[in-house]
Amino acid sequence: MIHPGLFNSNEINKGQVHSSVMVSTTPTLEGYRIVSYHGIVVAQGEFTGSDRFGTVHQDLLSELARIADVRDANAVVGISMAVFSYTQYRGNLVLQGTAVKVERL
Figure (cartoon, helix red, strand yellow):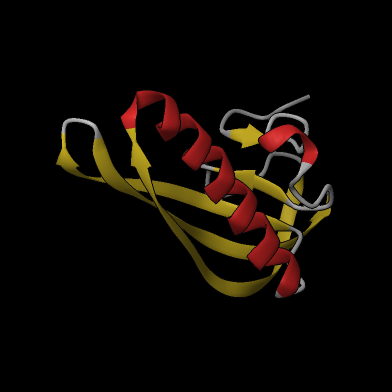
């Protein structure tokens, strides 16, 4: 089951995310407890046009998961997004969250 705000690796960039890393917009994951914190993770990218926005968003989720994996975390929680528009069709997208190690309850 996918929790609200939680994406699995099949939904993010067609499996390019490390399968052991969960990403979520919520501060906790139902059924898991946080056992350690591994810092804030940030990814940013530029988009052009509405179609490109979705691709950049998926790429940045993958990047957050990759960074978390490098830090020995298995989840990123509390993901937030900021969009900076330069023109109607061009802008910058920034995602940030907290890399954590979680274990099932």
